[in-house]
Amino acid sequence: MWWTLPATGRLRWGISVSRSGEFQTSTVTGTRCVVAMPDGTSAAKVRATQALGAEVELAGASLAEAQQHAEQLAATQGLRLVSPAGEPALIAGVGTLYRELFAATPQLDAVVVPVGSGTGAAAACVVAEALAPSTEVIAVQSAAAPAAHDSWRAGALLTRTNLTAVEGVATGRGFALPQRILRRRLAEFLLVTDDQIAVARRLLATHAHTLAEGAGAVALAAVLDHDRFAGKRVAVVCTGGNAAPHELADLADTTPPDRPATRQRQEPSRAVDGRHGSARGEVLHPVGLVGTRRPPTAGLARGMEATWPSYCC
Image 1 (tube, rainbow, N blue to C red):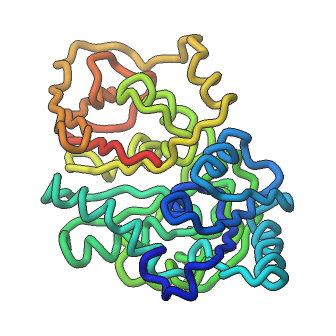
Image 2 (spheres, rainbow, N blue to C red; image 1 turned 90 degrees about the horizontal axis):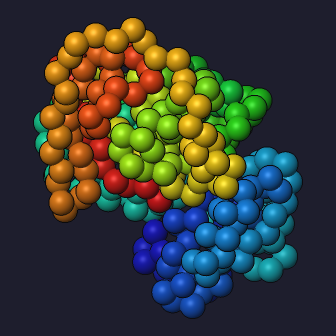
């Protein structure tokens, strides 16, 4: 997005999202970048954003209130306000992930994408339409913050109470630009609970060796819970690697969860693509995913193939 701005637009930034990846160019260019985040944003995410060269302004109890603060800063300090979901160039930038994914793993049946504002799912839709028209794009959001989901279902921009503990998908309203794209191309929009997201986080850590924050496990949570993915080649997108200390501590808890009844089964195969760090394996029921041990949950049927791109940010 940065390089698409005119020279006069590269002087200063103001932005209200709580993810750090969009601001990396401020380190490269020496440009001032100001990021407004809610007061409750994890210290780890704040430090990660500052490490990329941005100034962090903590304001308000929600993204909406942080957005208002960003708008005030833009007006009083002459900053260029960058919308967290209304910038076509931002969607184009996120789209490079899906271009790599479809190039590395063609002929996918579906790609499952976590949703906060909806820019990631919108980007997946745009790229899939051009490069993988037969691949379904399926969005997933927390049921405790369903604004994007409900907006898509209703065909109108809605606001919803945001009660999720998963920071990366904690949005309370639909955004016009991504919703317009999603209505044109999205195949399905699913909801998962925060508890299901927590189970998926543990599975990523133990079987894919990926320390994801909650947002990074949203897509996997849906795949574990829905039979529609049985027997299909599915890419699970993990975007969110800024796990807070308490999230890492949860993963360190070794208390064994309840397991389904055991039975004889074939261990899943495993193959690693060295260029993209992905692992592919046959998924059995109960779930085998990419490891050699059965994870503590069930939900996928025999024969499904899962692709695990290491696209955590």
